[in-house]
Image (cartoon, rainbow, N blue to C red):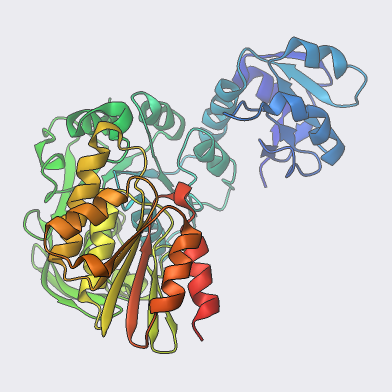
Length: 461
């Protein structure tokens, strides 16, 4: 259980104790007033649609023993409450400083995973492999931002021997801030795609932002990278004395003799004199890459190859991540957690390789692509046609370009349905579903495509 004295929090944040005792102790930290537990510290953060400072009293009612505030009027109105009050200049910065202070209490290695897609699955595979030998802390879900990473670190306990954290970003400076908090020993790069290109403008800039993770890496640091990625392969050998390069075409750690199954995929791992069959209980070439990254980390930390193979065979993805749901003779590929061009291509390749009487792709908008959005959706449309998908249903404003391009590339117009809403999609699916169909559902998180998956599960018996 996490414990910090008020004195430690004041020193870490360089804040000012307005009321309370430096000897008081908190046993947890929360940034959500609705979820505060007894004797926790509440840190109010400002979001796009809310300001946590407005809910400080609610947090106290829930049992918070201490609060941080950057609002002077809160300092005044909290004087009558029996809680410790710490005043700081900026609450998010305070969260980061406390997390950095707490992380330094644990002399354990951190592995940081970043990339445009595959971060969460790779992180989870790494944790599963390392768990064969160590007590592992990992990022839950995709708590990979400037709030999620600190909250993950606060889950550290004395029993943990190693930590695996995911680092996402949408602009310059974010990865640097996360890196400075976690101080990782190992950096894992999955790929450089076009996710968040809206803010960064080019893949070159995306790579530059990701490379903030290995700024100031020293001889003892380790870098794991996808050697088949055209951008990552350009990273100069100047950041670290030890690199692991993995891939199917390139790299020292390779996957050979790949065999695709309906619900799984297997390959031969080759590394130096080592050869070992690896079987994944999930489909997709992209998961071969994810598993290779995890194997690299396992090699670095002395995990036996037999144990790694067993861990990967037992691995199951998180909710809404390429889960194949069987309902009678119909298969639903639930991959609605999020979408960008790389993950969309990966999901379509799984649908393409799945045996089925008909293959139906239900695709929603890919968000945060900026000027590249139209071109990116058209690329997916071409892939739909090239993959011989039988029926395409799109949902949203941008995904109409998927539909338009698929028709340009030869898909029959009467097999293409363009919808504005998920409700419209469900109405079409209700009328066309047949036994033997395999149906992929995928779109960006904001498109709420899980509504379609839920409909299909309820509709298909």
